[in-house]
Structure formats: C-alpha cells, structure tokens
Length: 73
Image (cartoon, rainbow, N blue to C red):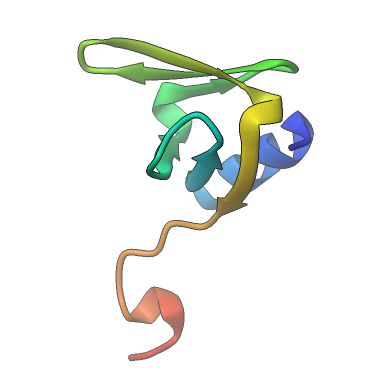
C-alpha cells in the first residue's frame, strides 16, 4: 500500500485497522503510537516495537466503535 495513503487515512481518522500479510489478524494503529515511513511502519507497544514493511499492508479501514459510527443509531 502507498505510505502516503496510510498516513492520510490515519491522520483523518485518528486510528486505523490494517491487514498485514505476515500476521493472521488485523492490527490497530493510532496516531500516538504509529510512525509510517516510506518503507516501514513502526508500532510502539507496551513491551517493545513492532515493525513491518509498508508493502505488506494489503488493506486499511476505519476502526468503528459504536452503532453511531456505522450510522445505525
């Protein structure tokens, strides 16, 4: 995925879910703990950092928390 697209989506939404080919489950990215470089995404976790290639991100979507987020109030 294009790193600029990822940055824009993260900045627009404050958080973002991504599917990375090397992981079985989606990852949640937040503005305060994620750095998206041109080649590598770094996610700061409580017990260390997780890095993966931007090219390994195959999907990204807004993380919803409530029915209102889906327009289903």
